Structure formats: C-alpha cells, structure tokens
Length: 241
Ligand SMILES: Nc1ncnc2c1ncn2[C@@H]1O[C@H](COP(=O)(O)OP(=O)(O)OP(=O)(O)O)[C@@H](O)[C@H]1O
Ligand SMILES: [Mg+2]
Image (cartoon, rainbow, N blue to C red):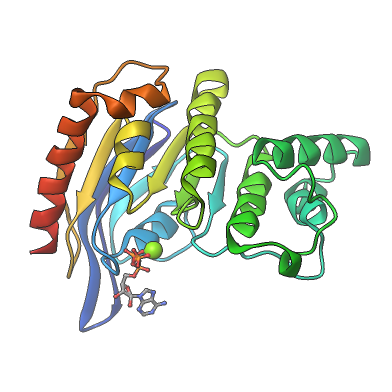
C-alpha cells in the first residue's frame, strides 16, 4: 500500500469539524477519485494525506514520493512557464540539460509547447493549471495528488489530459488521488470513486468502476458508462442531503 489512512478527523476550530473518521488507501497504480459537495473538505483531506496539514485523530502512512497539484496554480509570477516547471528539479540540483529536457517534455505533454517563455500573467487560467501539472510531473513521482486540476479546461483539453493520467499509470504505474466535481471524468479515470458528505465530512460510499484498462474515450458513449454515471449521481444526491 502506498498510502494508507484510517480514522482521520480534523477540525479547524472547536466548533468547525471538517473531517470525521476518514479511512482511505491507495495501491500502486491505482486511480482513486474523491467527489463531494463544495466546501465539504476534499482539499483539506488531500492536504492532510500529503502531510501538508495537521490532523486531530487517526493514523496515516505515506511511503512514496509524491507531487501535489493544488486547486490554484500557485506559480511564481517572475518565472516563465519553463522556469516554474523547473523549480522542483532545481531544488534537487539536477544537471541543467536534464532539467531543460524534462521540463520541455512535461510542457509538451500538457499542450504548452508554444509557451515555454511565457510568464503566468500571459497565460489563461487553464494554461496556468497545466504549467502546475507539468511542474508536478517533472519529478516523476510515484503518487500524484490532484485537486481539481482540469476544472478550468475546455472539454477536449480535459479529455486529452485525462488520457495522459491513464497513460502515466500504464507506463509508469503512477497512482493518483484525484479530486473532481466532474462525474464523467471520475467514472472515466477511476478504479474507485469515494463520495464524501458534509459537516463533518465522512466517506459515505465507494463505487468500484470495473471497466478494463486501457480505457478509450469511446467508452463514454456506452450504456454501461451511463449506468455508472447514474449510480454516482445517486450517491452524490444523498451526499448533498
Ligand atoms: N485554513 C482554514 N481555516 C479555517 N477553515 C478552513 C480552512 N481551510 C478550509 N476551511 C474550511 O474547511 C471546509 C472545507 O474546505 P475545503 O477547501 O477542504 O473544501 P472542498 O471540499 O475542497 O471545497 P471545493 O469543492 O469548493 O474546493 C470549509 O468549510 C472551509 O471553510
Ligand atoms: Mg477544494
């Protein structure tokens, strides 16, 4: 198990408990999505699981290298797209040429081959998120924590990046813990979908998505796919109650 957490609870203040008794695990190569109402605690949970936020109760272990894509791109305004992507590799003190090559490959992968030298304020919100994704990929992590990385993208770009996530799993066995509000995206990508409710949030249901890998975009037009979407919608409605 690459990531395993049990009984995680967290409050920000004494009268605001956000997470209650969350148990979650991630195996090598698994893609697990988290769905739930806005404000229920998904980002908080992801930060706790990555060791970036304190929690009050429970246990967890994370024994793999990971990268985190935050809900906001968090780029340095004074660095170009390429230089932002290079940051984690500069910290690791990799050779300059290797940094250059890895960053260019990652930016190509997210569809920004023409934007290496652009600064964040010259990029759209969706392009900035893609730089943030490229920055997460250059370190070749074993786990990706993705917090709504594709929310601001057009449908075709989203589909292309969805396929990249699947490819990362197929080619490098990268595991992904993925927060999204998009049910179609969750069904298409996930091995398992966890649904959270709110105040304080628990995991109220798990939907196991049993489609074979590798998955192709055509899957989305099948009745079986629609059935999974319907099933998740039903659980989400309960989560909003
Ligand atoms: N640093 C903080 N201090 C106090 N309360 C916080 C803090 N961060 C988050 N919260 C509260 O915790 C709750 C969960 O926030 P979180 O950002 O985890 O939600 P979310 O499920 O990611 O929402 P969204 O889908 O809108 O991104 C919210 O009620 C929020 O107000
Ligand atoms: Mg969030």
